[in-house]
Structures are given as structure tokens and as C-alpha cells.
Image 1: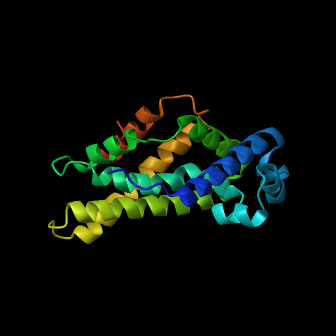
Image 2: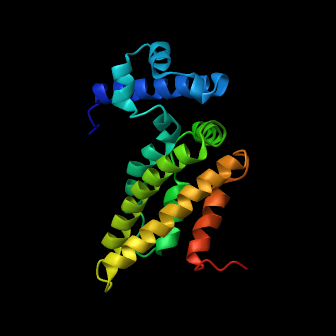
Length: 198
């Protein structure tokens, strides 16, 4: 039996996607600081209120690729077989990323190019904390019979979240031209190896 179509959710997502496309194009063309929310909303054919319903700030547009990954990552992790080790489960989940990598690439390039270090760092701290929660919950649930799992899950979640965020930002700072999958794998494998720097 087919699932019923939620037209409101589809319209809402289409509006959000349109706002993001308009914003990314304008940021690239005119510079992040030179574009207002009023202009973005008008160009997308919506009100400022609608913009803020989808994005808390103008900067949030540049981090949307991370935000949309949270729900997807939790679902992808939940589908991994219980026999798979933690690192392989995380890598397999990340590899199954279903979104448009070109949009992710554009956002990574714009983050590196348009917003200053402290503004970007503030958003990345929030993003990393959100990823850490998803990963911590996964570890705690999967290994709930391990003694001391609360601490171990938080450390694992924080370390893996940092590895994922740093990989994507490193890719963006490098011009978003390398193999993102390999950079993510290298980053996660650094954590797996206990940060052996040989």
C-alpha cells in the first residue's frame, strides 16, 4: 500500500529548496555580506517571515547541508547490521548520503569563501554538537550492555562527529575538488586508529 502524499510537507520543502538555491546564487554573485534576507525572500517570491520559518539566520543557509543530514544519518545508522563494527557502520551510513553533492559542494565553498572564521566556527560548533548527539545515541543504543557505556558513547559520538565535520570543512577549504568520500574515510579512520600520526 502506498504511503499518502503530504502536500504541505512537499510545498514546504520546495519553498526551502528554492530559498536555498536563490541564496547560494546571490551569495556567490554578490557576496554574503551584500545580500539581505529581504532581498532573498523577495527573489524567491516569499515573505521574510517565510524565510525565517525555514532558516533561523542568513548564515544558516550555508549550513543546511549539515542540518538535513542529521535525520538522514540517524535513519542510515539505524539500518546498519548489528554485527558491523562502529566505524564501518558510520562510514557505510555516510557513503549512502542521498542528497545532491553539488549543492553540498557549493555550500562548502561558500562557507570557506564568504563567512569569517568566528561566524563559521560558531555554526560548526552547533552542527558538531548535533551530529555528536545522533552518534552518541546510536552508540549507546547499539552497545547498551557494555559497562560504562554512557561515557564511552559520549566520547565516541563527539570524536566521530568531529571527524565528519572536519572532513567536510577540510574538503571545502581545499576547493571541494577532492574525493569527499575518501576524505571522510581518512578522517574516521584516524579516530579508529587512535590518532596514530605516522
